[in-house]
Image (tube, rainbow, N blue to C red):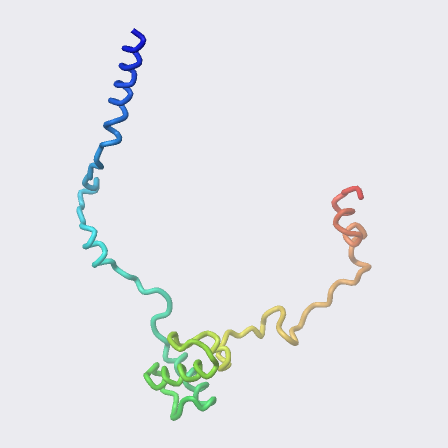
Amino acid sequence: MSDFRTSFALILTAALIAPSAFASRVHRAPTSGQTHSTSHKLSHKSHKARGQQAIEPERATQIQQALIREHYLTGEATGKWDAATIGAMQKFQADQGWQTKLTPDSRALVKLGLGPDYSSAINAKDSSFAAPPSASTIPQEQASGFATAAGVNQ
């Protein structure tokens, strides 16, 4: 009787485990009602361009003037980001040992004097700062340190 129960238990266990081991994955249609093939998704993937796509004429004029000043471009600044301007910028960047694929490079703009203006930054040279308060105006608790001010026993 014991052999029968053991055999029955083994057969029952195998019957419960076997279907999940041999089951094939069933492909279900999307619930949204739309069907797309994988190749369709890959071939028609929309790509939204990011970042600055064009250089404004005013900025192009500034860059051209700087390149003319540095003798990388000749003539007058036109405000058009044309092939001559791109070539001059690439030459300037190459002479600095920088990449030339992406123009203008931020380092090149800074080197040409066209970078961001930090003259009003708090750590700018010759900035006017208020003088710090004199030590006599600082409360004693604060002057003696954080531990004392926090009431921590030392």
